[in-house]
Image 1 (tube, rainbow, N blue to C red):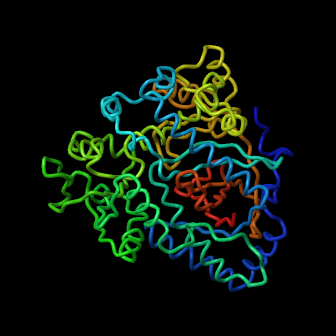
Image 2: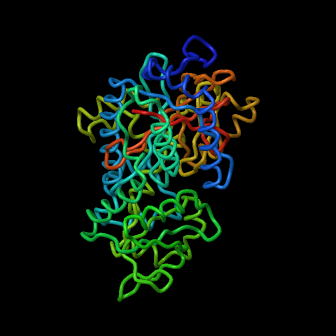
Image 3: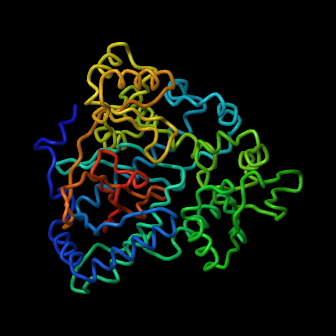
Length: 440
């Protein structure tokens, strides 16, 4: 099991994969008045766009050798996640581990369109280790909006830095229209047509996050974009309409829990996507299965090794912490989880923003942990080995913070990266973490 984060396994200077020479110069720039002002401006801009406080930290650079390894890893994980989605329909062992809630099972069963198994965009959340390696904790195949904001921050810092400072080349997310561009490319590859208009679908009154900027990006590309509720989708013999307007392509901003809550009102939307009449990023199965944290249980279990390319397995499997469906664990394994809470984390498979994550080290007493384990077992949560990460000060006047490393991936290619730092064990921005742009 992982070491305690208070021991020598952590370090105050961050991950050894970070470039110390560039990072020192970045810290120096950030500590100057211009850098401090830029950090405040970015925090204010992104907080205003998101509608809540969203703190931005100083930038970090990754060594070229580590960047190459991260790229290889991202490509392999993307292939393996898409492989899991495809196999789910006919591999009984995988579908047993990656169990679908009863209220979604019929939709998943009826969805057989190959393009709906694609994962166009996802985010990989990694924990970095003191030895210079990393572990993958989960994948987000739903709506990873932080990549928009990390792109803003990276581009702003690149423009402000001295021309004498050599930093890695810009990733796609620094481009002002990148988010719309990857969507257009994915839509064109799937449907054979370039969108003339795009419906931006979200629950009325719900989270907008990246939608305002995405609308701007589409308009810059000459594409009309408008917001609507997925309940506004109508599907019939004449095709798909949204608010009475013919639509072929839509960007879906809908959390899994919101989808499940509204499912009874979404027959037309689901049927339109299932049939291919309406394109949405990550389709249906790509989103519903690819976003499920139980995918890590498949990637962690040697029993599934023969389902994947040998080279991909050899690269990815050692970097997946021990992860299992708690409902399928042996009595012996469940006993260990119960008795050694400091070594385990429980994760609701379809929850977001860290709300469905229970870290054993944060649970006050054994009785509360036992209750959490029983809930997780009954509801088929993921149980995962706790992994101690590395810490950073990033040149700021505060104690070292735990940090992660998040990679934005489009069709296997890294398009953006950022680090989240936090004084607690959860580095989620929604829970008060701080986002640091990463040059990779």
